[in-house]
Length: 134
Image 1 (tube, rainbow, N blue to C red):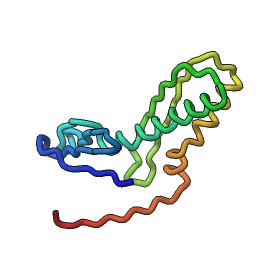
Image 2: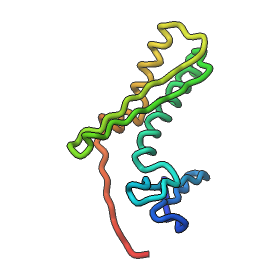
Image 3: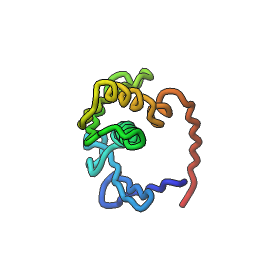
Image 4: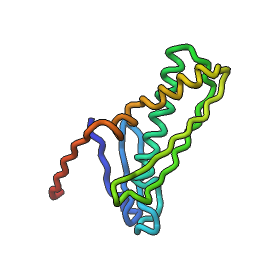
């Protein structure tokens, strides 16, 4: 699958992301020279983790018949040591429904196993970049 982005010429740095029929604007903050017209790449990275955890929990709960009514996910970023090689994300899932303590504990374990958590912490990601004229 290819994901395509193209500059949004109505803003200094913004990129239009076209993905599976969805359009999203990504932009740098004003302090970085952008217009903050959309989430930054770091925001999207962090949000992807939160979405993955929530979707994984909902998928598992549906599969196992666990009564989850709602999931709210909060991702907190600590990027103060990013240049030193440490990027910290804290995920907090708030789950409502007629859950027992055991089911809540089970869902906590499931959230730890979401595919993006694994990609961000265990898997070696190899990236190649080429630059060409349009």
